[in-house]
Image (tube, rainbow, N blue to C red; front, side):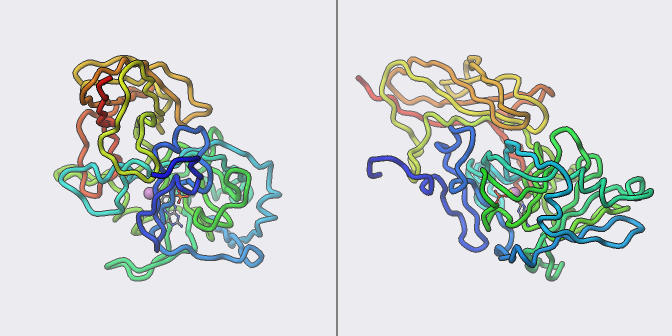
Length: 364
Ligand SMILES: Nc1nc2c(c(=O)[nH]1)N[C@H]1C(S)=C(S)[C@@H](COP(=O)(O)O)O[C@H]1N2
Ligand SMILES: [Mo]
């Protein structure tokens, strides 16, 4: 790689052009906020270009007529909130699985953290659910403008539901977001309006929102019942919900754009550092090994700025010449710990195995 400063646009690598899928370089995850140009992108279909002036959000509740809102009308329903939110694709880490599984080829960059601004969803629900509508509601469905065909399902939009308690949460509420890092949402992140659900794998954070329906029975669509399920042969399928605890070593990390599998380090004192987060509470601790998992030391931990976003950790290491395997292993306050070996499932979701990297320390 040529020397000099790395621009933010170099901090994301393309997986597929259309639909657009791109992952963030590990080096970009050293920052609390990932620059928008480096924020990972995951889209199942081509991005729909929606004219903001013509765009409306249609909302319906059981027993009532649908209503519709312009972006301005939504913005006037209550005070906007700006929150730091971590999105992580449920397929992050999929390419590490052995035997390999089908699906978008994420290494470990299917995650980013940014400031989202929007209306807490419960304010909209309170506005549209009158009478006994909320008592009759079990799930809230979010239907987007992007569409495509799926075998056996014909042409379908991207659409997902949330259980009512998650949709109506007042603590770390889902946001109907129109801005990312202080700017209007870019096309590929769901302009003009998307859902952002703190703590949940990002499949819940529906982009290019067009309709919201309060449902009196569970939603059975393709992206709910056929995909985004943990399928383990011989076990009952479980839906993909909250982010499983994960840590990443971000220093040392490959140079952006480089593909080295063994990182070169000079001998002597070094700081190993990284991030860790969980959708199930706070990070309780991170243990680091420099010998492939034989011995472990507890990392110094800085608390996350806000729940479900990355906490930073670091350890000092006196790097001796030779090859070493560095491993990071986080645990959360609900007692979950990253598995030492991968948790294989047919669709390759939620692989939160420990992060292992190989380093070669030069002699003198
Ligand atoms: N409308 C729509 N919303 C969507 C998707 C999509 O394909 N279409 N992909 C989901 C998935 S699987 C992920 S991981 C996140 C990615 O959000 P980002 O592209 O802003 O990073 O969007 C979610 N929302
Ligand atoms: Mo995803």
